[in-house]
Each structure stands twice: as structure tokens, then as C-alpha cells.
Amino acid sequence: MKVVEGSITSPKGFKACGNSIGLKKDRKDMALIMSEVPAVCAATFTTNVVKAAPVKRDMAVVAEGGKISGVVINSGNANACTGDKGIEDNEMMAKIYADILGVPADEVLTASTGVIGVMLPMDIIENGIKATAPMLTADVDGGHEAALAIMTTDTVNKEITVEVELGGKTVTVAGMSKGSGMIHPNMATMLGFITTDAAIERELLDEIVKECVKDTYNMISVDGDTSTNDTLIALANGMAGNDIIKEKNEDFDKFKEAFYAVNSFLAKKMAEDGEGATKLITVNVKGAKTKLDARLMAKAVIGSSLVKAAMFGEDANWGRVMCAMGYSGADFDPEKVDIVFSSEGGSILLMDKGTPVKFDEEFALKVLKEKYITVDIDVFNGSESATAWGCDLSYDYVKINGDYRS
Image 1 (cartoon, rainbow, N blue to C red):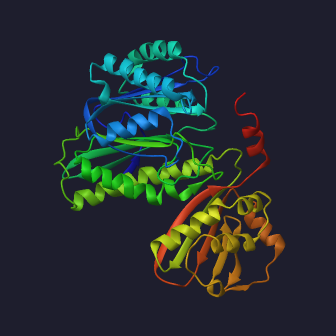
Image 2 (cartoon, rainbow, N blue to C red; image 1 turned 120 degrees about the vertical axis):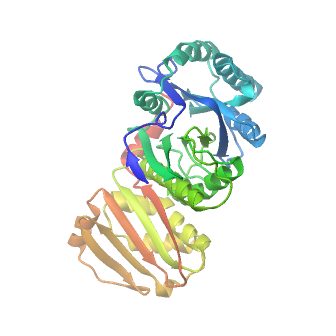
Image 3 (cartoon, rainbow, N blue to C red; image 1 turned 90 degrees about the horizontal axis):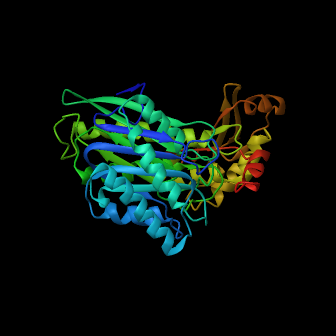
């Protein structure tokens, strides 16, 4: 497996584009994806009880198990909490794009992101889809433009492409995502789109997607809020020509590794690009009794507002780490915990087998002044481990969300 230059159009048979249709001022706000042949699809969605119109429809369409030919995405408007009219508008959004592609409406998925509780301006949506569709291209730039068009408060586009050899054929897996705020998932998070030309049975792709989110998107946190629109869609059109993956063999394992690499990268990029963030924090927990315990502890630490604030203030407050572990619901003995903070500035042991270690405050400040901070935790209770990613909590987070609707 290797990372290559590319975009979601790099896998054979995929086209994409991005355009500015007028939902946002002077920014791209519509993205289209299409597959030249209908693609096998697997997806995960928000577990928030309040689900946006596109989430409700996509869940129903994906559950039917049919193949997908295209995805239409808008930013600037979430189409969430918009009642029956929002459902109708979302259906129309799918139908408009499906008619252009010449496929049934149930071969098109939709996604929206932006302000909640505002009706979609359907005249802008309809004209925008019709104006944008002719821009569809297999060129790499088409994927880049799509990645820009799905952004909201993101400061950078998030994309990655990898290649892997399966049975003598080069298979490409590419992804793009958006996510900067309302990041605290319990199934998937943000908007994410994975394209691949691998030939794989739907049931196995679905299994990979669901397993992958547990250790990637489920292990990041920016602000403790789970969105109404969180969606991850994976499309596999089989055009690489590899022998179809029908069982858990060597090709399955290699494809899964590539798929995980793509989604792990995107998850970390979202954590790093958290609204107002100045630091990316990685929390590694090892020595847990169960995988669940390891995940619970890592996620609790990365999701703690007090830990985040301490990291922003460059304060080596390991007590907040212990506190978060304690309310995580995990089984561990506080009297056996090691905690280490590290960065390019150095490494500092803060707790040794449950006992506080006296440390040099100036050196600790040097460690925490860096952008990339790692918190290593060993609970000496077993052999399981987990990693979570997040960011600090800065003054700018409040500023960004204080006037989000404007």
C-alpha cells in the first residue's frame, strides 16, 4: 500500500466537481460525485435522534442494498429540522441529479451541511445542480474542487488517495471529508465520501466500514457535539478488475488496511482542524482489560473540555486526564496508572504507577508549546489498546460558534 497524489476521482470510473451556486457568499457550496457504473455502497450515519432529511433518506436507500451511481452534496444549509417540506426538497434534490445522470432516483444519495432549521432554497438548488453537472470530470482537480465545496468552518480541505495491489491489479482507495465543529460521534461523524475501484461484495464492504469507524471517526472529538447530519458513504464500483472479494482472504485484509489508512488520515485531519484549534492531541491508552475499556478511556480524555482547555493553556494538568478516565466507565485501577506527555519538545513522566511525579514546570511548558501533543497512558490491566485524537479548546472556538449563523 502506498499514498499517492490524487483525489476521489483517482479510482477508475469516478468523476466529481465542485461549484459555487449561491448558498454561501463567494465560496463553493455544491459537490457532485458520479460513478460510470453503479457502485456497491456501504454507509454509516449519525446516532443523533434528530436526523436531517438527507440522513433519513440515505439510511432508507442504503438499507435496500441497491447500487449507487451518484451523490449530490450541498454546504451552507443542513436541511435539518425542516419538517415534511425538507423531506420533499431532499427527494427533489436527488431526483434532479438522477435525471441528469439518467438513473433512477434511488441510485442517488444526498448530503447536506450547514445551518440547522433553514429551508433549502430549491430554485438555487435546482439551477445549481443543472449548472454544476456539466463540470463533472475524471481529472484530479474535479475531486479537489468537490472537497472544497463541502467545507463549512473547515480551514483546509481533507483528502487522501492510496493504492494497493490485489491479485496483480492496482486498486485505488480515495477519500474526502469535512469536519471542524460538532465533532463527537457515536457511529460516524462529519461528511465523508470514500471512492474505490475495488471489486468487493457489499456485505464485506459494509463490515469493513462499520469496523473502521470504531477506531477512526469514533475516536475523535472537537467539542462534544454529535451533528444531525453525520454521514460516511463508501462506493466501490469494481472497475479495477480485481477478482471480486467474496471472503476474508489476503486481498480482503490488504483492502481493509488501505481503507483504514484513508479513514484514519481523514479522522486525524478533522481533529487537527477543529474550530479554533491550535494543537492536535493524540491519546494512546494501553494495558486495558478490554478493547472497550481502552476506547472508553482514550475517548473520555480526548473529549474532556478541561483537558482541552489545559492543553490550550499549556498546563501539564495530568489530574484532569485521570479525572476523565475515572468517569469513562472503564475498568482500571487508579493506583497502577502511568501518564506521559510528549512532543517534539521532549517527554515528561507525570504519574508513575499511580504516584504523582515531581516535574520541572518550565520543561513541561516546553513540551506543551508544540502543536502536536501525545498523551500516553498505561493502566497495566491487560493487553488491549486504543488511540483517540482531538484538539485543544481555544478562545476562537467560542468566537466561531458565537456568530455561526451570520
